[in-house]
Amino acid sequence: MVEWQGTLPSQEIDLSAMVEPDVLYSSQSRAIGQAMTRHNTDVSNLELVGTTYTITFTSSGSITVLTFNARTGELLSST
Image (cartoon, rainbow, N blue to C red; front, side, top):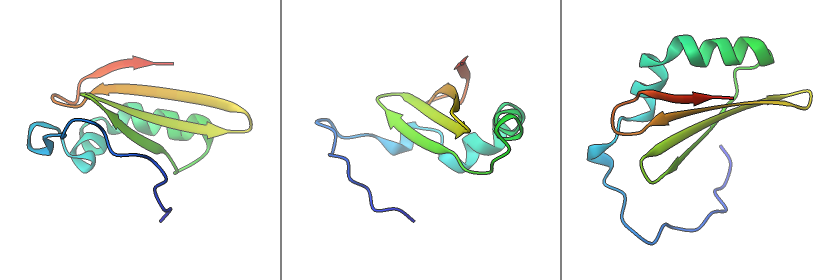
């Protein structure tokens, strides 16, 4: 565990309207697994901003970023 150094958002986040992170990782296991394999890691950074989840994978100077609709779990982009 890492201590969170961020600030709280100005508006309340309604978590009941969002896909839970474990459900997102499970339902998008193929896309997430491919990124983990590409970076030879099992570590990712998950961030929720508004209604978008961003998952970032890094290794040896390369980065893969996946974004998902936090309400539906739909993959929005992969870079």
